[in-house]
Image 1 (cartoon, rainbow, N blue to C red):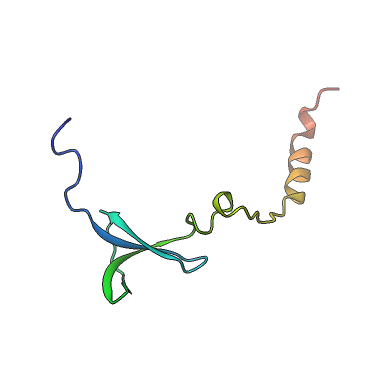
Image 2: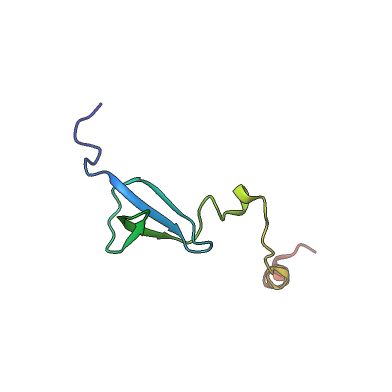
Length: 84
């Protein structure tokens, strides 16, 4: 294995899912300026939009997405290429 390809500065970092406020700790080299206190200890904070605790694949809950207008828009846009 090549030497010097992996970073050496792994540390515990708090990742916070902003959609459901879930916080979990893991090792990372990601840089951040924010911190958060978890169980009396301060950790660097990385904010996430979605994580394993809020992603529909893992939770089994689907979110309704309004796509009715998108299909009609697509059909109208490409109707001129329709074979007759």
